[in-house]
Image (cartoon, rainbow, N blue to C red; front, side, top):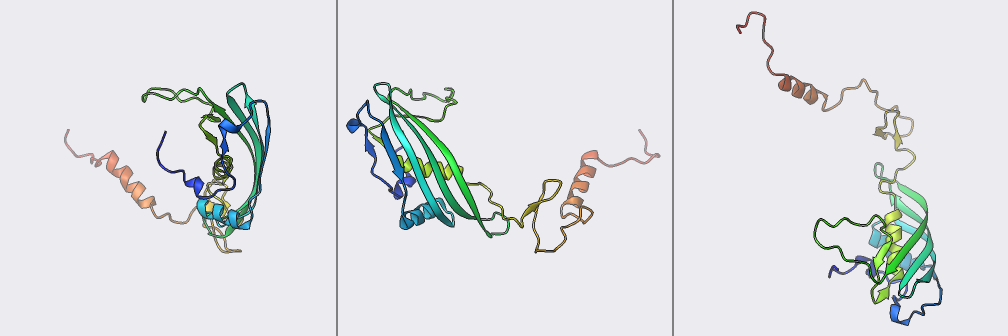
Length: 199
């Protein structure tokens, strides 16, 4: 395991659960509903403009004698900057969260070990950090390229943006690198020979 500190632990929504204190026949209901100050901390950590809503409801259930199963639902409303216009974009996130904590999860050895396809399984340690799980789930669910309504896709799939009412650039307009592409093609073909050149 890595010795580097987990950056998610800069924000603590609840104390980690000590596995040694969990009862193997009991189900533990979990609810995280951070206040405005905590949501602001999460927004700063994830480098988004704002986190207007955040709620994580889950249940931690025993899975056999030593393992644990966490099933929950994350609901959040986030504000990010548009990747094109830098205008604020509000997104609603509803995400199912599943984690399985296994006491006997084998450690990968060597570079040739094939990683398991099920990425919901984790090694069971001394603690189960619900705060880290909830914030990580939010970070994974964030839109990678938020887009404002005025940043539209043209019919050919090209992202374009212009002031309201402005006509988009026509396909017949010159393109900055079109000349370079033509020159590259000529160089790859080599010099043309005239009909009078000798063999």
